[in-house]
Each structure stands twice: as C-alpha cells, then as structure tokens.
Length: 137
Image 1 (cartoon, one colour):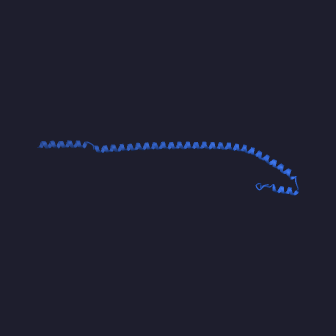
Image 2 (tube, one colour):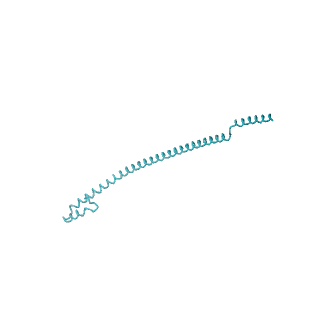
Image 3 (tube, one colour):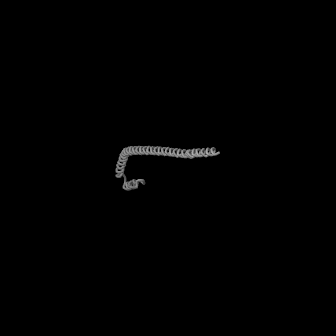
C-alpha cells in the first residue's frame, strides 16, 4: 500500500505539473482573434480613407473642369459681344449717315418754304413745324 500511495502521489505531482505547464489555449485563441479583428478594422478604415480621398480628388477635378468650361463660355460671350458691338457700330455709322442726309434735305425744304406765301402763312408754317415728338426744337 505504501508503494501504491507513493506511486499515486508521484503520478499526481507529475500530472499536475504537466497540466500547469500547458497554457490556456482558449484565452490565447481569443487574444489572437481580437488582434486579427483589430487588424481587419484598421485595414477597412485605411481602405475607406483611400476611397474618400479618391472621391475628393474626383470632385475637385470635376469642379476644376466646370470652372474651366465656365471661363471658356464667358470668354466666348465676351468675344461675341465685342463682335456684335463692332457690327452695331458700323451699322450705326451707316444709319447716322442716312439720318444726316435726311435732316439736311428737310432743312433745305424748310428754307425754300420760308420765303413763299403771305406773312400769316409763313407764321402758321413756323408754328406747325414743331412736331409734338420733337419737343427739343
């Protein structure tokens, strides 16, 4: 009995030391999983940040393109307005020449009529020569 109890005590000591040397694998696995989850989250955050940066860059490029297109349109409008103004000025000069000729002819007609007729007729013509739309004369 002494031998068996000594044998049992020795076996218990050896087996206890064997159990004590083994680490708890469930906690180690949980820690590894936790670290892996954090790495995945960090990688996901990096990817999202990269996508946001790309979107910002695309928006900036689109805004730049719109700004350039607007500037081109504005310059084209200025060029068109300049051309129209030039055309109008040449047309206006031609019209002004025609108006000057017409006014000169009318002035000559008035002079011709001033000498004809009686004094009363000349006075009436002078009074009626002022038209209602020509209030400055």
